[in-house]
Length: 156
Image 1 (cartoon, rainbow, N blue to C red):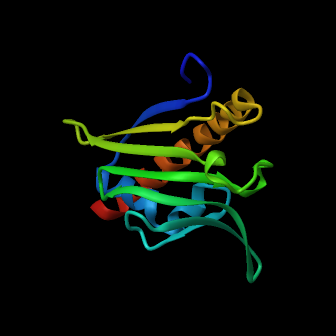
Image 2: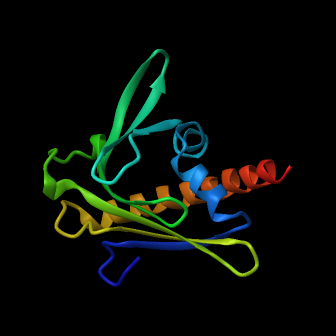
């Protein structure tokens, strides 16, 4: 986290190509494997809405939503983010921004860099940042696992 404690910054190396990481990052069925059984739904274009729906039986529960700000396959995925159960009103000031960048390394691995912020100004901003940071650690470990499995499947 940054000095003020209201921005999350994480990075990790994944033993997979950017294409494999991108697939795990944007395909709804793969996202569900590492992100709380939530499925992301979108047209996957800049300026379009994105929603995360938890599948519970035949119905889904809307858990989070936002708007895609940047969508560069294999390179960058940036979007606004609002979590429905966060106790905040659904208004612009309650949304944060997530920015994920992928960079291919010389050894074939992919450097995944995550930036999520800014929580400053939200009620209990430091607590919200810490909770989101813990969730991101779990999600990134899952993204790594699914990406590496996809990479192996693509190579076979």
